[in-house]
Image (cartoon, rainbow, N blue to C red; front, side, top):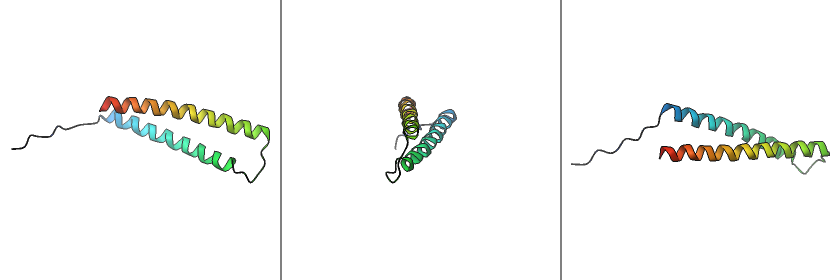
Length: 79
């Protein structure tokens, strides 16, 4: 006779947190998509546009790093 397998469950709150993370990643994806078009080498950029793009990248990078670390901690806590 086989042993019953352990049932792993995920709390609804954890699913909501993962959904929130995915929504935030989608927002950052959209920002990076904009930057991809902005950085197209086919047109000249003025210094203000370049500064704005650099600031946008910095915000995306910092928030993505925080999101990645937090999501990793939450996933490790579930394992």
